Image (cartoon, rainbow, N blue to C red; front, side):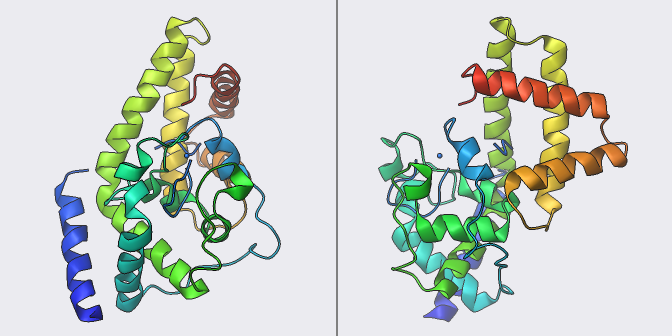
Length: 246
């Protein structure tokens, strides 16, 4: 059975890559992980409780990916979609929409993702059920590993979708006079560099802490300036407080 699932998984990931498929800053229905309205910021910046803090994902094996694929298909795809883009049939009527977990799990720390899957949507005001009494700890890690692997094949498509959403948000804010075009350009630049950095960041801690450290590292490396970071954070607050963020 596992041998068959490994073959199926390999085929699925290949198909995801062949499809030719980022905000850091969703409800969840009966799928697995959270994630896409203004409440998303809170869900990604939450402090991980002590019982989950510091948990790290085990080494991924073929059996883990195969088991994760089976768990995901059974429990998650109906809301989060077959490729983790939040477009499952049961998620269409949910508000907030299911997370694009193929993308978000790439950047969130291990302990935060494990916490969100284990406790479900209750701490975040969403409809996702808690899985800690349904799945074992190993099964939760398996499905996280599978979603992250699947996301690596979906990233081009996810990037295109989220870049379009970000462009629409910034255009709307500029047209309404909330920010200038120059501010929008700076926001887009810093946001892109921040996400690229976060995709390779393996540090633990909540997302706010990791983002702050990432921005400081980008300034130190000369990738962006402190003035650009300050402008980015100012525009972020304007977009958030002004209701422009989806």
